[in-house]
Image (cartoon, rainbow, N blue to C red; front, side, top):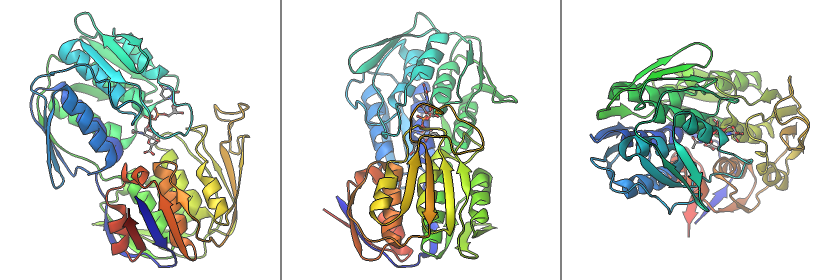
Length: 431
Ligand code: EPU
């Protein structure tokens, strides 16, 4: 499938955010912790939830979706071995804890996901081992078992990994005794997962300094829970709006989850109004350059740097983006440069502080000279967020761009072409 996009239109009007990709998939895995039904509201229809549904169905979940309501129940785990779905996304490893809690054994495929760095899973495996899981690697899978129940432990992360924290939480809620997770991730989607687990009967405290305390319980019950609006979509729509010099109300956008982004946006000359229905984005003055650094929450999120960099190609002066979460997340700048952007990527840390990639030769700092007009170029989407950059570039550019490999963007943005068309974009989906 491809997108045909003719640039030059200002985006105007209103758009509604879908439920968060990063949260929805984790809630599906959390539903495996109970034999009772879980009902999820504001549930997105995206590629990554379909892959996760395949995983959950293969172990015994019955799943149905009507509109934005997803119902799931796994009265029994009918199979603890999932050997297909290898490297499709990063979710399968999160199922180890729930499967061990239910049936004492688990086999799940290696994780995949976007090629934006090595993305090891050492922290996941260390957390599971600390809780008493015995995990072996086969050629394509992680095989885990536990004698009796998992046992609470003190898990100290070297880095506040989102996935490893989720893994530890999902494994600890039904473990015997107390688990303390130090240097945990505190992203809003993860906090919302914790809120869902609490509603299911878990005992979880959020302490100071990224510490999570969990007292394991014997069982969890079913729940109804609403998925947060996707803040990555909110940022993408904000960048699209400013890049095309438009004005868009992003319905459901929540200021609380976007504070760092909103500050960066205003610093470059973007403006916004927080209203009851969401946030209205527009430009106040010509855009100007900025220095930013990605970080764990509440910092500037790594998933925001791609649409923001695309926007910075339209800002006056020099901008610097220092990526400190992934060592290789600037591949898409080659696509922008082919369109006429002026972006150089360096291996030095071009930020306030040296990050953990300093001196390792990873090209993780970008310098953008702007503004540069962009011209239409044909692209193959590299990954989900790079795909959004291709779309933003094409909407700014003169002429028609053909963008293939759009399954990438479909993994995380629901009906993106339809929603952009309603905002006035000239975008068609073709075979
Ligand atoms: N890391 C390790 N060891 C581990 C786990 C992570 O070294 O065991 C490193 C990673 O290599 C990376 C950093 O820690 O350099 C951050 O990884 P993290 O585990 O926090 O990320 P993740 O859980 O794999 C999720 C989102 C990403 C998002 C990050 C950061 C999902 C499925 N993915 O990934 O989303 O960028 O958190 O917020 O939730 C995207 O949506 O485009 C995307 C890549």
